[in-house]
Length: 359
Image 1 (cartoon, helix red, strand yellow):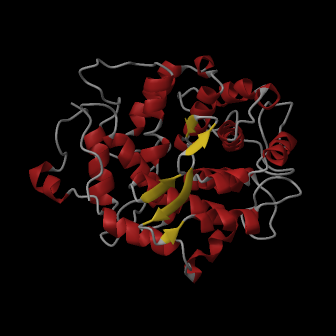
Image 2: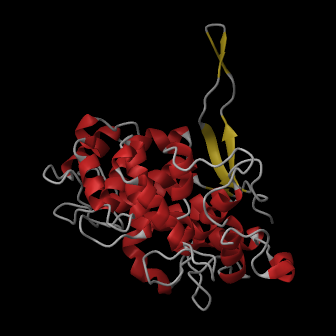
């Protein structure tokens, strides 16, 4: 059976299946400082480096939040839901991340965030920056988001003809831009009918005969684009316009029975990042879209969760911290982020789920 019980590599390998949380922490915290020259090619991805790092630290449980003190107002106890600080072991203050994003990468003219210093504002780094700021989560950080200018920036990238969005001024129109726009607008509570107009049509047109979604109408179905389209559709409550049964079938076929991980496209190699891009679609479909509900006694996603964990932990984990695409590849922040997030998804889905991340 494809849905196996226990480790696919046998009992011996199960004993070695250990998530090296402290090593991952060391790798990630070091990445918040000075980076090596080998990462100069990512100069236009600085907000992504921030997001990949602190999001992964948060998933691993290392971000510590300190809440605001109780305040008496008119005889009633008032509490703030926002923390006053976010730190790693009370030594690494994450507010420096949000300050860097605002002071060096926010474009006050357009209202969006740049990928690098003095570069053009772009939806992708805007998504990464806003998500990183929300992960920091302090009132000081969130209050600095200029929601009016951010709304104007997203609106300026709207393509009325297709219903989609451009990634930047005069840039490409694709499903990534749609997800970045919808996600940021939803997080900052600026999503309205004007921004949402026609987006459902664009998303629907991106679904292919395979069942997955491509980057644009007519393109090949792809794991990352499928997540972007499905997540956007759920945010807009228009997911019923998609062929969800066909989508679910395509997703289940992307998990490879030999490796246990997911491939991003048909006839492509398995890649650990799709543990999130593909794996996250199952909770979206089952929990939010109400597709293929499983019996309460099962409480599992419609993927082989144990096989996925085996692939991530045994095949993609650098013993000194960090994750890589596949065996033989170097570790990097991108794959560390999405492999560990995918691992968390495979371990957290109800009472009968496997244990949560172990140290």
